[in-house]
Amino acid sequence: MAAIYTILVLFLAVFVAGFILLIMGAINFDVSNSEIPPGMNQPVKLRIIHIILICIAVVGKILEKIGICSEINFVRYMQGVRTPGTDQKLFIKDLCFGNVPVRIYQPKAPTSSQRRGVMFFHGGGWTLGSVDTHENLCRLLARESDSVVVSVGYRLAPEHKYPAAYEDCLNATIHFMRNTEHYGVDPARISVCGDSAGGNLAAAVSQTLAGRSDLPKLRAQILIYPHLQALDFNLPSYQQNQRVPLLFRERSAFFALLYLNGDASHIEEVLEGSHIPVDIKLNYMKWVSADNIPEKFKARGYKPHVLLDCPTAVYETMKRFCEPSLCPLLAEDAVIQQLPESFILTCEYDVLRDDGLLYKKRLEDNGVRVTWYHLEDGFHGIISFSNSDWMSFSSGERGLNNIVNFLKSL
Image (cartoon, rainbow, N blue to C red; front, side):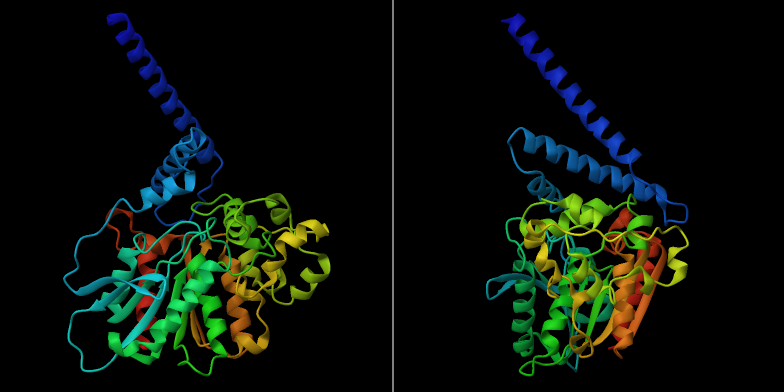
């Protein structure tokens, strides 16, 4: 019996040691293949957070390999582990707008007038994130801007492909617009807001509602480092920041494909630009082109990309990337002209920087008022760490203060 016990202990020790070595090896590989350029805000803190996220992803991969759960579900679980306590200044309630779960944040302080309303769509590449992951951010927005914030728990990919997330956000927004009296909100002061994939959803919802005569007009759209196109993953910001945490170039394409098709098939074609026919790309180059990016944003390096043709079979699986409700940068001028006042936040060290810059140009070219704030030392995801104890970044706090001030001006 003692011999069996010894063998079991040795086996467990070897297993644990191997598990740790596997994780350490994966961390070393991912860290060595990442880059934190000089000039980034609080680089040591960013590196620590990046390593933590790598650890979670690696454990998720291992659990998926041995059949316990998928990597995505493990990451989702870990994201929701920490839940904030009560808030002395807010009423917080979980509801459903139709079939869409939402969390509403209402200031407790009495007011003699109706408040602003903010529909918030969380980021996470359409596959991760939840109302819980953006709890701190939504609380801060509601408290500091004295607004009623509605955070939408839209359906996630790959279980729910496009247009599920877009439809949930649109339907939740319409429901809120039609029921503002229940929440003390001025129907003429409703804005949509989102970060990353949530910025994509906010832009798409704003475009769809722009032509609706049966609903109040949106007061504003607030787009925080939004993902707005999937035609060109070789823009200057993609080349310069392809290995900069927290969003790598390849992961950006990976998430877009999961949202579109539920899997990452043909990711190599997407990255090299051979997923859309040349004639279609040329048609959209008036809006999606490095030529429309100011020269100062090419200073860190940019090599023009050669246009590649696309196999018909590949395009058949990718053609919905040309739909504005998936890629809002591709909307026609007639739609862009009707959009509300806009706030766009971009970060220098972010693969999605140029999506924001290109959309800013399109809005301004069509007479839409734009407030633009660029974090020279910021990275993708920096705002989501705001109001989060030790994980907050000073640059992110500056960006969030500008968002709050914009909301207060509405």
